[in-house]
Length: 194
Image 1 (cartoon, rainbow, N blue to C red):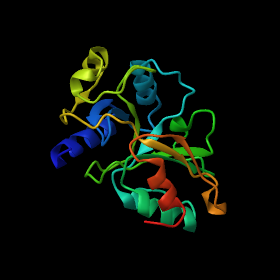
Image 2: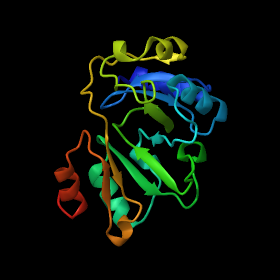
Image 3: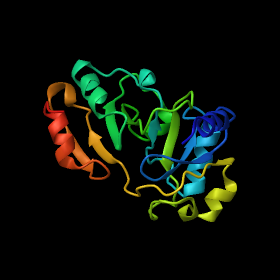
Image 4: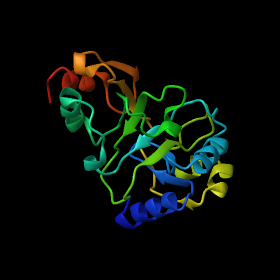
């Protein structure tokens, strides 16, 4: 994503819009994680049940919330990258993204870009449908209803690896979904390697 596209994404989200954009793995939908109307619209476009959680995507590592010394050190090694991290969220930040468990936050940092704000993010497909590698793979109904559509060409097409780090301060972690980053890579980094 170019700097101009990133700025347009940030402006769209700030204005309460829903955008289709190229992430690092597949095309995504984005909106303001604190705007209930925008979140409801994003979920409606996907046909996603409102109780299902979504991730909050950051584009600036300095904005990623601190968790604890051990977890923060791991985040510094994993991010940016093709992972979605389930983190403890005792302050209940971004409740609209958290679904029925406000004390768990799904967090992504795909790359650093001048978006200027975090966004609620979900894949740009119909719930349960195939992930979109190309803009043409995003369902027409979603593209037509979005306030901004950014074409980033063809993407790898493998969704992020989801890693549960809610108990990482005490040394426990697990893979919830294998994806773009192989489990062996996560294990090496989580267990002290690089």
